[in-house]
Amino acid sequence: MSMPLICGMLIMVLYNLTDTFFIGLLRDDYQLAAVNLSYPVMMITVAVANMVGTGASTLIARCLGAEKEEEARGALTAGFVLTAVNSMILTAAGLLLLPQIAVLLGAKENTMLFTQQYAGILLGGTILTMGNYTAGQLLRGEGSAKQSIAGMAAGTIANIVLDPVFIFALGLEVRGAAIATILGNGIGLAITLRLYAAGRTVIRPARRFLFPGRETVKEIYRVGVPAGLETLLTSFAYIVCNNLAVGYGELTVAAMGIAQKIMSLGNYIYQGFAAGVQPIMGYNFGAKNYRRMLDVLKAGILTVSGTELAVMAVFGIFAPFLAGLFTGSEEVISTGSHALRALMCILPFAGSTSMCRMSLQAMGRPMHALGITVVRQLVLYVPLLLLMNHMFGFGGLIWAQPVTEAIMMAASVRILVRMIRNEARF
Image (cartoon, rainbow, N blue to C red; front, side):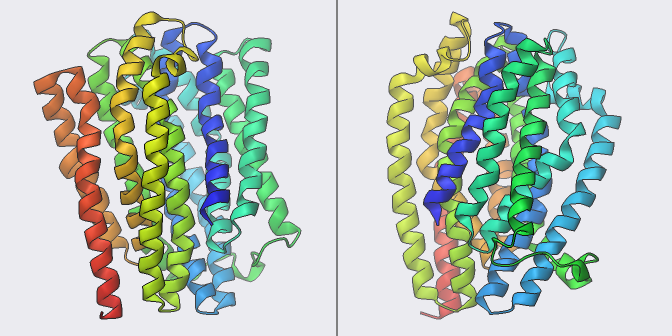
């Protein structure tokens, strides 16, 4: 289940890195910084999609495990309907408040215009971004991991092709990068919808479920809201980090953005493992096969930790080279390499924490998953970010997250194992 998802996630790495790479070729570090400052807009869009996608996909997995196919089809249809409604609300609110959003993101004099241009286009295409993300999750909920890659792959290829066209050929620069991103998501969504229309999935949407029942919506959001809050709180922490980084200069924001985009390689690997574990845990929870759940958890933690240690070695050795792919500024390369070598230390810990959180969601325990999220971001990371930045400067800023993730891994694994044993009573 995990390997096809990891391949798909690696495709998403290219999606994220493409804009940064081509904007870097403009040799304008302020536009590069604007792309990084605008990233929370994409994160918030994904967070809202995640509320529906995770809630619906876990409900689909549990229903299929309990052999309730009609309920699973209802959850699938509700996932699409709720995504469409939420995207329209987010687009309207985001475009109306765009100037205020740019200020909140940390944009200053040299990056304000670029940030508004990039973020505004992302907000305008919210329905395509959210639709593409949610559709992939719904496919994973029924166990169709390989099929879910098709949309991601098509969207990424389209983004890679369209970026240079819009950025350079049409001279749209940072606006062109945003347009290419939106169009890529649109193509990915179309591919996934085609799979459903052609009947190449386990279950299909049905017209009779176009107006979801109250209980279905309630169950989707009961599990999905904590999942979405994970990304929303991560976005909040990202914004706090960027606003602190601006204090060291706007080019520092560009350097941090490069490090964080390179980090997405490692992040998507552990997210792929966690997403692969989720439907297996949900299915076995529905089937009351608790011993297999513990076996899956143990194998998952060992595998993701070992894989991420190998990724860390690559990042540590090649940090200056990797940063240099996105900019020609020696200052940005130096700062970005330093940040990457600190941030990479989160990978073995964050992977296990993410796997535990996704497993709790799959078990229909959203409040426990939410508890991990709140403690991780609000109780530990943001206070440590502010404290360590104050005490140690930029070094404290970049080391606050690895410290947080090490603590959270120990706590989250303990919580999940105890819950599984309580369910099984052994």
